Image 1 (tube, one colour):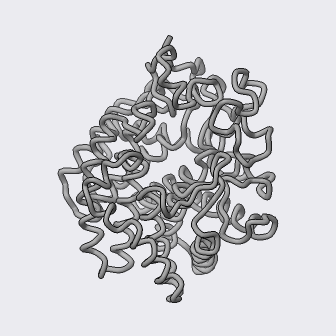
Image 2 (tube, one colour; image 1 turned 90 degrees about the vertical axis):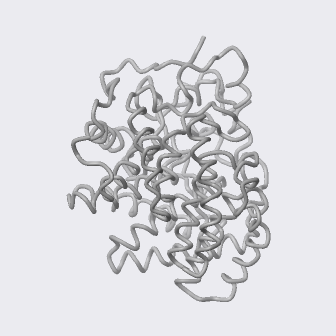
Image 3 (cartoon, rainbow, N blue to C red; image 1 turned 180 degrees about the vertical axis):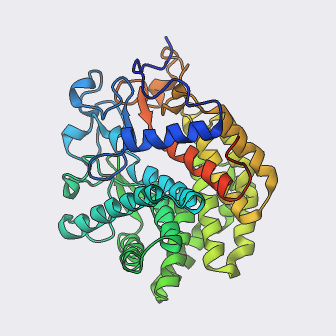
Length: 411
C-alpha cells in the first residue's frame, strides 16, 4: 500500500490550473476558505478527507498521540491526537504574510491588505493573551494547538515557529504597518529577544528540554537576526552581548559548506531560515554583509539540492519540501540578485500545482517499508493531513517573482 490522494471532494480541485496565475487564484482561495479559522489564525493542516480540522474521533490509530510526535508534548491531552491542525500555525502565518505583503505591492487590492492585517491582528492577540495569562510570561509564543482557546495551557514551541512569524511580521512592519501597529510590533520583537535571553534559549519540545542555542544553525541564525533587530529598535548592551554569544557558537558553521550539509541543516526548512535571516541581518546592519554573503553562498546550493531531492535532514525524503526551497530562494535572490536562481523557483512552482502535491507527507510513499513509521508519519493523525505551509510557500514565491518582474500575469 502507498499514500494517495484521499480527498473525494470537488474542492479543492484535483488540478489547481494550467497557468501559474490560475494556480495562484486557487491557492489564495484555499488559504482563506479552508485554512483560516474563525479567530483569524491560520491552521497548518486539515483532514484531507473532509478538508476540515482533524477531530479526536477521526484519529482512530493513534489515540492521544501515543507512539507519535505528540505523546509527551506539554499540551492538554485532548489535543495530542489533533496537533497537526495548528502545529505550524506561526510558520504558515509568517510565510503567508510575506507573500501578502508582496502581493499587495503589486495589486493594491484592499482585500490583500485586509488578509495581511488579519494575520497580524490574530498574532498580536495570541501574544497579548500570553502576556496576560501564561506563566511563561511576555514574549513566549506557544504553538496554539487549540486555536485562540486555552493558550495559557500551551507549553510547546520551536525556533522555526518564532523565526517565520518574526520574519513575516518584520516585513509587514517595514512596508505596511500603521504607526500604531509599529509600536505594538516593536514591543513584540523586543519581548521575543528578552524571553529567549531570560530563558537561556530553552523550551520544552515533545517532552524534552531543548537548548536551542546549541542545536543547529537554524536557531543560531534566527537568534543573530532577532538580536540584531532588537538592537536596531533599542540599542541595549544585552542584545549586543547576546549576539556575540550566539556568534561564538555558530559563526563557523554558518559560513562553511560543511555546516550547510551537516545533518538536520541539510533540510529546506533549516537552510532556508538561515538564508532569510542572513538577508535580513545584512539589511539591518550592512557592516555584517560580508559574513552574511559567505553564509548565503554556502547554504543556497544545499537548499536547492535538498529541495529537489525532498531531503528533510535525518528524516529523509518523506515530506513535500520543494516549495520550502522555492520560498527561501526568494531571499537568496533578494540578497544577491543572481537570476540563475529564478529557474529553480519557476520550476518548483510549475511542477507543484495539483492537490496531491500539497499533503505534508508525499503521495506514493510506501506504507509497508517502515520509512513512514520511522518518521512517525504512518498514522492518520499525520499521514493524510492536507498542509497549509506548502500553499503559503507557493503564494509567497509567486508574488516575489511578480513583484520583481521575473514572471508576468500570463504565465
